[in-house]
Length: 206
Image (cartoon, rainbow, N blue to C red):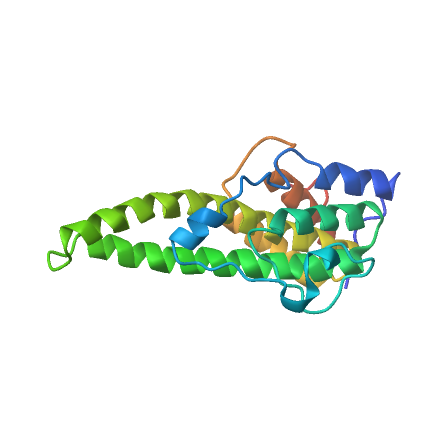
């Protein structure tokens, strides 16, 4: 497998610049109430407790939920700044799986609620309740779509740093396919394209 181009003057500076890109880590307004309202129950840390949210090493059995998602994103950012792509990968894989799963569940529930509000056999009071819940779901879907897209880019970047070229390419291609095109050189789309071309040794070709 090919490694990322060696054209770097400062690895730490490059890591920080990419991971601190505006909008890269989404500042979340707590949406636990909306998740509960839409019957997407948050997971818990169980026996680990809150005190173990920031262990020195990433522990096995990480449980990502809406309440701790932003904290774990910050941990990934810190690990990347230090060049620790092993622990950052462990967390990011969990974030990626969590956001994908939530997005899938929310879309399934939304589909059923939309059918219910148009079903003449459903009582009007129930329809009104489902309609209110649909508004909550409409807020969750774009939020988690953005989070899932970001985690896909993150995995591509981290795998590239680890020299796992094939996995990096797969995630970067997926990101380019799912994310709207942007001509801005500072956009995540362009950053993903540039990194992908580096992995193919096609820098500057297109």
